[in-house]
Length: 243
Image: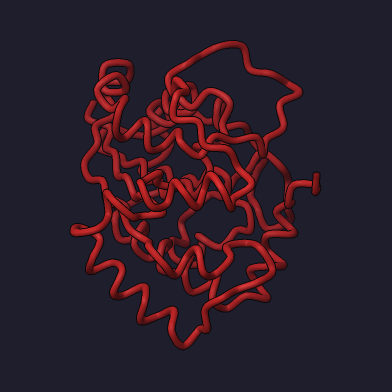
């Protein structure tokens, strides 16, 4: 089995793949547009590119990199209550051992009225076929995304279950609302149909030229309300701390 990519690996691929940059920059712009005014904490900053779209951002990850501001575990955030106006993460929640712990930590560090914004894999009838058969990370729709337990010091931070965000925003949405009533879902969008899988993601190859990718992204976003629940590869969720 190949070794997991490091933040440096992700950044190197980012620098070499203009199609990948275009796709993620589109995501970052849409997330930045949902921010409320004030300080932002990025969890799982990885290659450290979100800051270009929201300069007042503190970037963190569970593994170090020179361009990140600090190293921390999302399940044990080292900040005082109400320290941030926003918390963002991209492709992170499905890697966390106990997502409910991270969500409680996020609620704690947010001020009332603050926002938690995440972009994650969406498991739909179409994307599920791709994720299960052509993506290295597992998809377990039987998992309990609200499970809790003792944090393992030996857990590989790259272990994952891509189903977690879909479960939390779908099947287990009401359970999450009861477990963490301060965290209220404000909007949920399903998008990304063709451009992302054809880009190869953070793999070295791409099946789509840059000249076509921009047009595809625009078309896909316009079609999200029609085909999102059936074919989307990603979800964008915006939560607000209501008290």
